[in-house]
Image (tube, rainbow, N blue to C red; front, side):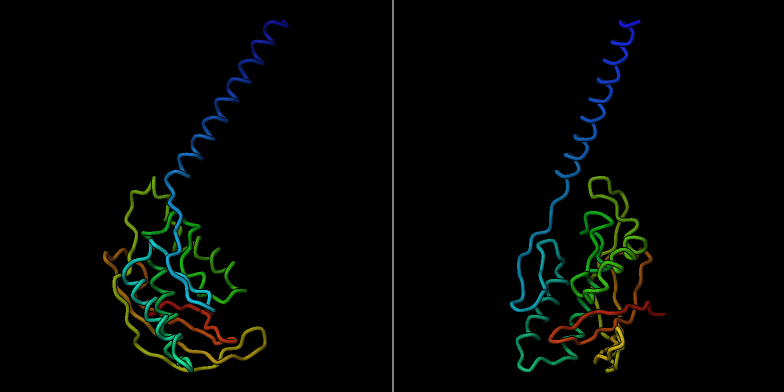
Length: 203
């Protein structure tokens, strides 16, 4: 009886070790296949950054934002328009993201809303973004973007009113996969920063 018990114990231990090794090997493999984005540029005194994986369209519009922020005084309508374009490009370019939790455009969102924004995006727009090493489906890449209309407005947040801009945009993809093509981005001005507070899908 003792002999059978020892054999069973050894067998259970062996199976446990094999399972642990498989899990460790899987984690190592996944980490090896995820290349973290590297910041290649940042705008002094602002929170905006550019990554090496960003598309040419993203890089070009980031340079436009840099030029807008060099002006003294800064033109708020141009500033809001630049933020709206970068928000859309980064949010809807999914091809360069490593998985569903690698949500784009977060740095443009109002800080207190970033957690909810990310949670909502992972359950909707990003739900089909599987890890790159296992990816077989095509994902969208925004190839062009246009501003159709800019409306100056007021936006109430936490019982406080802020100057805001409602920016209507349209955009196209390298391949049309059924994602949004038009929408309205609302930006508010708080202190010296423009933040995205709302996105509405257009008709």
